[in-house]
Image 1 (cartoon, rainbow, N blue to C red):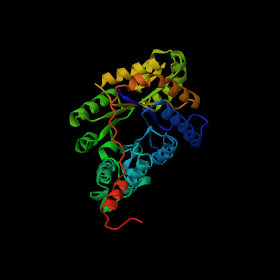
Image 2 (image 1 turned 45 degrees about the vertical axis):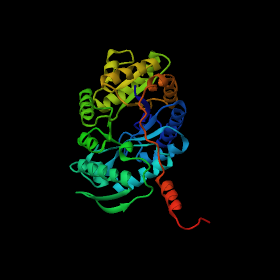
Image 3 (image 1 turned 30 degrees about the vertical axis):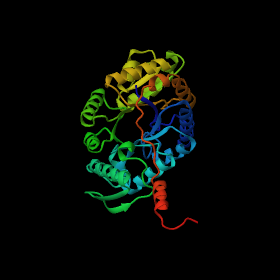
Image 4 (image 1 turned 60 degrees about the horizontal axis):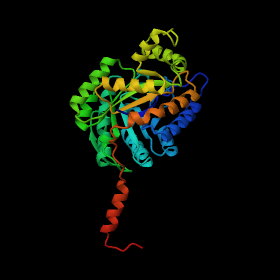
Length: 355
C-alpha cells in the first residue's frame, strides 16, 4: 500500500483571508506530522488564480521549522516562472534546513497566457524552458555546479552553496505532462500524476512511466473528506464537490449528498468521502487500479470545508494510517551534509595543528 500524504491546493473558504488560510494549513500540517502522515504537498498559484500560495518553497520553509519528520513537497513549482539558479538555491536551502525532507515536484504550470507574459515567457516556449530547468536542477543537486548552455538559459560553471545532501533522483518529482516520461527515463525521476486528469490519461501516464523507469515511484494527488459517519462526510463534502465540478469538469452539479450523481462526480474528481475505513478502502481500490502506487496525497482542505472539519478528517483518518502504510515502500535517502564531510576531510588532511 502507498505512503499517505496531505495535499493543499491553496483554496480559501468563503470569508477566509489568505493569511488565515496559511495559519490553518500550518496547524493541520503540525497535526499531520504528529499523527504519522508521510508528507505534505503544496501547490503554486499566482494572482488569485484559484489557489493562494504564490511561493510554495517559502511556505514549506516555514512548515519545516514547526515540524520534525513530515516530508515537504511542492505540487508543483512552475519551473518557467523562476530564475533556474535561484530556484536551485532555494530548494537546496530548504532541504538543508529541513534535514533532507524536500520533495521537489517540478512542472510547466502554464495555466493562463497572461501569467506567462508577466513572468517573461510564452505558452509556446514554456515546455522547453521547463525541460531545460529540469536539466539545470539535475546538475545543481548531483554536482553542486551548473555548467549549462541551452536555448533559453546559459550558465558557465556556477558553483552553488549549500551543496546538496541527496541525489537529484531522490529530490525531483516530474509532473505528468508533455516531457514527463522522457525526463523521468533520462534521470530516474519519480512521477507526479495530478488530480484533475481523466482516468484514461492517468492510466496511460502510469503505464508509460512503469515501462520507461523500472523501479520508479508514482504519486497520485487525490481529494477527500472524512467524518464519523458516511452521511456526515457526504453532507460536509457536497459544496467542495460542487465547486470542483464547476472548475475541473465545467459542470454544474446540483445534486445533494444523497444523489446518485454525487458518487459519479466524486469518481471523476478522484474524491473519496466517508468514514476512515471507507476512504481507506477507496485508496486500496485506487492502488489496485494502477497495479500499485508508492504514494497517495489527499486534499482534506478545500472550498467550503471548515478548518475544524479538515482537522477532524486528518485526525480520524490517522486511525487507519498504520494498516495503509505498514508495507509502504520507504525509499527516501538520508540527508548527508556535504559541508560537514568536506570540513572533516580538510581537518584530517591539514598539516597544521588546530588551535
